[in-house]
Amino acid sequence: MPVSYVKTQQIIRELWQRIQPKFAVHLGIARGSRVFLLEQTGRNRGYKDRDVCGFCPQSCVERGPEKLHSVINMRDVSQHFKDTGIDVLPSADAGRFLCDFAYYCSLYHGHQRAAFIHMPSSGMPVPLLQALILTMLHQLEDPGQPASSSVSGGLFSSLKKKLTSLKEGSSSSLMVLMISRKVGRILGLYCQHILISSNLG
Image (cartoon, rainbow, N blue to C red; front, side):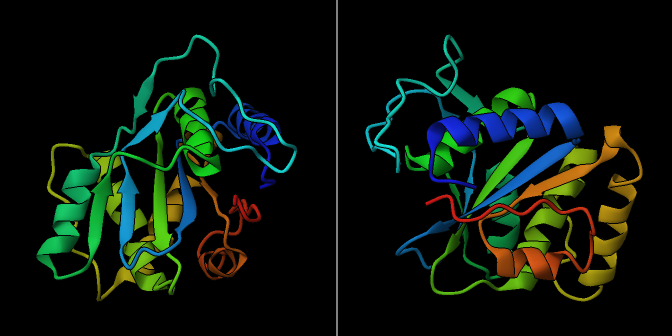
């Protein structure tokens, strides 16, 4: 995805309108972080950094709510992984740049059915990333149930079944927007229709 506010907004709006996914997962790199951060909130205003075009918007969506929250309870998801000794933390600030901007736009057009995962720049443990997505899907399907305990054995087959079932119809499809082509290729083994974007910046 280009490091452009205007183009990012257009791409996300068009993807939601054309594909009509059930849920979207966005991935970004959290430079300097050693843990996975699960973003709960996208913010409409307060952007100060300019993009590659020298542009900085006053808001993501004119007259939109100041904040939008994901339907996924990131605190519950992160607590599940904390209980297993894995460093995953909830976050309420996605950074007020392209990641935050893209997340708010997706939450707005997707009626809050989106998630944003900030990955550490030091490495990308793919099984953990897959477990995070799978746990979110479990919560999405049954919010009243505790987070899935499937973070190790059987994860790959479970994830494959989950993604396959969600892709059977346009009303129950999964859209995954990524800034990492490497992760996209690996996850692509489990879902042929994953959408991949380039660096968000």
